[in-house]
Length: 468
Image 1 (cartoon, helix red, strand yellow):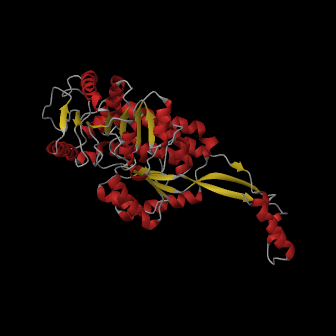
Image 2 (spheres, helix red, strand yellow; image 1 turned 120 degrees about the vertical axis):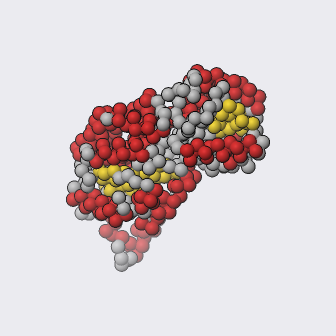
Image 3 (cartoon, one colour; image 1 turned 60 degrees about the horizontal axis):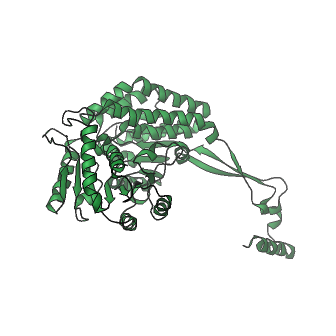
C-alpha cells in the first residue's frame, strides 16, 4: 500500500465514522469478534511467531501474548458501560444554577503501529482500547516480524469492514508514510530512536501521539534482600523472549559483595530454566541477524573497555541467532551497552553500596520505562518511590506491573508518553469532553456590560469571596 492509498483508506474510515460512530453495542460486539478470532486462530498466531524468531516456546507466546490479550478484552467488555458513562461534577458557584459534566467520546480513526518483539499483544492490545473507546482504526504491524504481521492482517481484514478496522503491512517506507498520515490519534510502540522520528512525522498534522518506548530499566537490590530470590526473579523476567522485552531488566545495581552469589545463582537458574540450552525449544532466538550482530558488537566494545563477561551456560555453540545469557561486570559509562537499551540476554552489573548511590545513579540517566526494587523495608521502598521517576514500578519482582489492568502502562521522558491498558487506554483514545448546561435564569446574565456601579460592586464582592 502506498501513501495515496493509505490516505484514501483513512478518508474512507473518517467518513464512515462521521456518519455513524460506533455505539456501545457495536463496540462490545467488535471486542467479542476480536476475542473469538484470536481464540480460533491462536495456533496460527503461535506458529507465525515461532517462524519469525526461529525458535520461541508455544507456552511463552500463550502466557505473554494470547492470555494477556484475551484477559484485556474480557476486562474491557466487563467495564465498558461504566467507563463510557457521563460523569457529573460540582459546578462553579458563581455560575449557578448551571450544571456541569464530562463524557468520553471517540476521536475518529486512529493509527496503531505494533512492535516485533510481541507482535500479537503490542498490535492488538492498543486496538482493544481503541475499539472500546469507539474509534475506527488502521493497524500497521512491524515488518521485522513478517509472518505474524501477515496472519494478523488476514484475521483482521477478513472479519472487520475496511471502513471500520483494517490492517496494512509493508516495509519501513510504509511505516514512514503511516507516521505522517493525519490520523485522529497515532499510537506507536518501539524504540526511542524510532519514536522520535514518528513524533516528528506526526507533528506537521498536529496528530496527537502515544509513544510506548523503552530505555534502560534498572533493578536495584538492597543488601538486606535475598540474593537467591532476587536473582531468580530478575533472570526469569530477563530471559523471557531472550531478553527482547521492553520492560526487561537492562542492568542490575547491587553491592559488590553480592556479585559472586548472584553469578552462582544465575548460573544454577539458567540450567534449571533452560537445560541443554543450545537444543532447548523453550529458549527464544534473537529476531534477526542484524540484532544478533548488534548484541555481539556491544559485548565486544565492553570487553575492549575492561568489562568482565561471564558466560552463564557451559555451551556456546555457533548457531544462527542463538545468544546464550551473559552477565557483564566492571562496566563503565563509556561502554555502548550502558548507553543504549540492550534488548537481549545480556545483563550488566553496576556495583554501588547504598540505596542513595543507586538512586543518584538512576536519576542521572534518562527516565526508564520500568524500575525494579528488591527490599522488604517499607520506609526504604517509599523513600525510593518518592525520589525516583519511571514509567512503572514492580517491588520484589520484575515485569508484572505490566499485567495489572487497573494500572496505567506507559513511559515518561525518553521512555515514552501517554498510557494504555484498561480505563487509561480507553481515555487515551477518547476526548474527555466538558459540558456545561445553563438554565434560563442565571447569575452570569447580570455580569454583562455596561458595567454599572451596581455591577462593579457585585464583581468586587465576587473577587473578595473567591480570594484564597
